[in-house]
Length: 118
Image 1 (tube, rainbow, N blue to C red):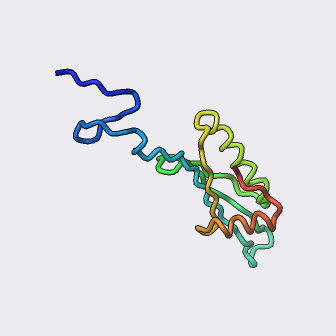
Image 2 (tube, one colour; image 1 turned 90 degrees about the horizontal axis):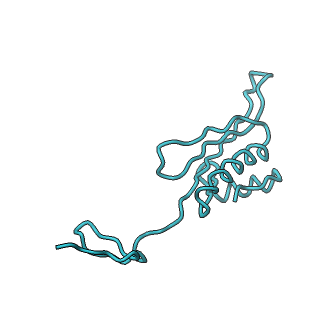
Image 3 (cartoon, rainbow, N blue to C red; image 1 turned 120 degrees about the vertical axis):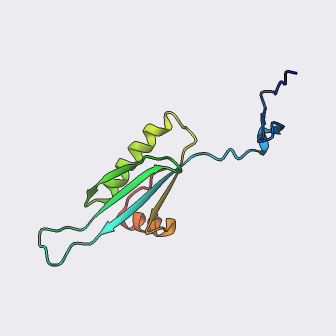
């Protein structure tokens, strides 16, 4: 016996049709974890700055962004990567955190006059 499935349906684990509307179709998320570095008081050459790691949630690879003294520059690099990814995944959502907090990241970005990636 041949079984046909309509284009708007998928099969569950038992081979039964499931409405696509019931499946989780949430857009992919690009997580950005920002870190702040304070200069070492023992090293006069050391400077304060920022770095970040980013990647699509649940992907096995990501990006380590370079250290910079400017949060705006760092977030600009992140935005460039997000823009490139959106050419293939237009619905990509960006979540930026500082020490695990989206609210703290928003507050610091506002203080620094930096735009969070969208």
